[in-house]
Image 1 (cartoon, rainbow, N blue to C red):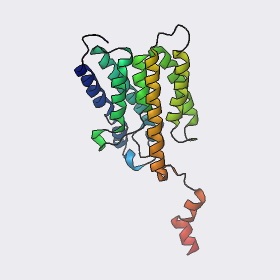
Image 2 (cartoon, helix red, strand yellow):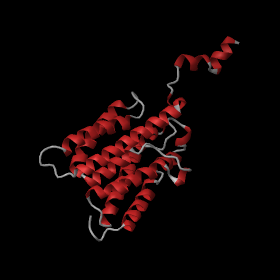
Image 3 (cartoon, helix red, strand yellow):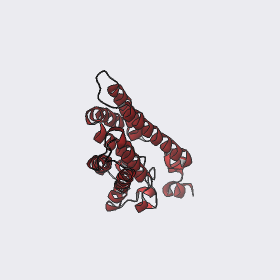
Image 4 (tube, rainbow, N blue to C red):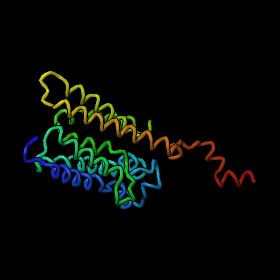
Amino acid sequence: MSPDITFNTFVLAAAIAFALGSVPVAYTVGRLNGVNVFDVGSRQAGATNIWRSVSRKQGVVVTLLDWAKGLTAVLMARQLGLDSFEFLVPATAAIAGHWNSPFTKFKGGDGVITLMGASMGIAALAVLASMALGTLVATVLNNKLDHPSLWGGIVGYAMFIGLAFRPNSNIDPNVVYGLTGLGIAILLHSMYFHKKHKEYFRIPDPIEEESESPVQQDRLG
């Protein structure tokens, strides 16, 4: 750590990152399209919910902007003098802001995309390859599993670990451990939300819906 880096530097980097992470991108995009993300789908402010509840195009927009939040948080920290594993501080703060945005009464999304953006700022080449694979997996799994972006993130990070520990890698192992820890934290956060709100993820039964429809009730009457 550079002697110019003080505790206040970390506090400032964390504050900036939290502010960036808390920008309610998905909520704003949803509102612009007449949808409140907290009333539909998974009730989370993330790219997946926008993709499913608004449109694929808007889902891509949210993905890019949430990714930019994490990347910008690390780039700002770099301007303050932070380096290597020190970037884990703004990365963590950006995710915390995404989880608990004060602009949406401390509600948010999983934070997978934001973490991917922050990781890109720390280890660009390894993360770019991992992100490409993770995005492919998330796209394939969309509408097949809950939280496809989460599963895409898991696959992408597995590839990142492999690249980071290859011979002659210039990535600090502490960075790998830290980012892996953040990935696990996001997984646990998502699992907790999923368990707490099982009703949000229940797949409607077409037969049940048909039996409860007004047309069917009129016929039975």
